[in-house]
Image (cartoon, rainbow, N blue to C red):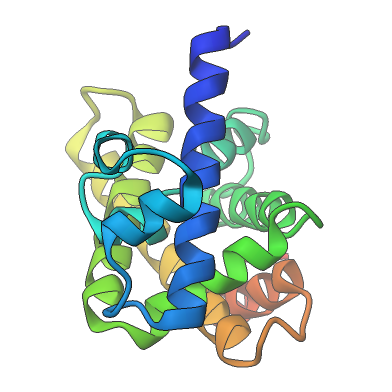
Length: 194
């Protein structure tokens, strides 16, 4: 169970991110300053920087990797890796597109598609997610062959997911994101993903 301090920190981060995204959409990403975000959120600039050291962090930050790792931990160990990882990513998309989170995710992804610096940071974030998946499935000191195979499969799954996320953002979230991810995974692994 999280402490009161952790909950308040998470609430502050969410408030700052929502205010930042609102301003980015209204005024433009490059035109919005950290001071403007602080003012809109009713906090000091120092508070913004304490939670988000860079403007890019305000868009990139999310709490979805732990959701994927949790889903992996409950997946059948005897299922093929592509199914375990793919279904974990679909479960994460289900969590990310609940009514409370959908619009926030869509706004974040649309900015990531439009702003080159955010695209690069998104790929860094994807790499960190891949590392977390590999560690969750292989442990901290994996067999090199097992790590290679897990890294290759997780990278391919994340690549297919990325294509679905970009398509979803470019089409203004008109389709059901978990279904798009499923379709992208099925196109990538037609014989292995169900």
